[in-house]
Length: 349
Image (cartoon, rainbow, N blue to C red; front, side, top):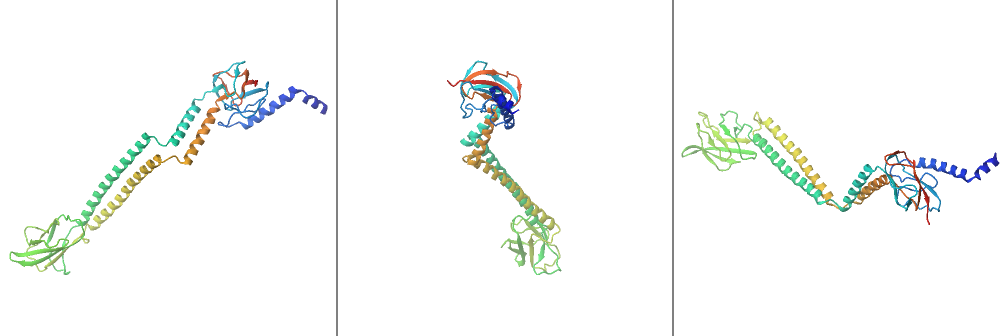
């Protein structure tokens, strides 16, 4: 038996066949992923997916079998049996529409990152910033108006005059109108005898204004927007009156207070959202205007390299100068990964 094995191994054809089977098995195991350069799976293991192949040197007469590492539809076969080819020459290709599209996008993105944003990109982002600014100002105006209205309502919580000395036996004058000074405090009214009858003078929120006590027509209390009318037969026993702004004892005070607090909260929330939108727009513009960051360049380059690898897998290149000895594929044919496609006989001289 040993002698028979030795005799078999002495036959070159058998040794070559065994070697080819081994290479086929190894090649099938190693090449599964798109983007990994395809290997020649017969005779000599070299890279046929790139123009330069690998660094392996060939001898005249070597036979090299080339294959695609992926399945697909054959697009073009650029050689026929007997053609002389040069190293790096494209011999055949698969339909590469999708791979080419992905490669072009990756190239454009990589170049865009290297060059920075285009003027058009920046103009779009500037428009976004301007719009966000206008929106912020509009929101501020709307919410400030809403807060002002609710605050005015709070200040106008049914005003009333109460005795300054705290007495509980009194007939209060009628307070009407709409308070318009926009601030809190006390309006003080002092009654006194004048040549024209009984008059009043103000202090506190309104200082030094004089009016006539009238029991039929309400009289203005300075420029506050409020009016006062005294009732008949009250004897004017109380000479000093206070009008608290706002009147916290009014029946509608609590409702007005809650509405005012709600308006403040709404303003804070909506203005905050509008401000955040503006900050985001400014950040996007600043980032776009900034020079490319190393990590962005590296990421884009990695994507480009993967796309280039996937595209290269759609081509078979001559790995050396030679003569086409076998063409085993045709345009339109569906091939399987590592299916023998083209064979070359090396011609280096």
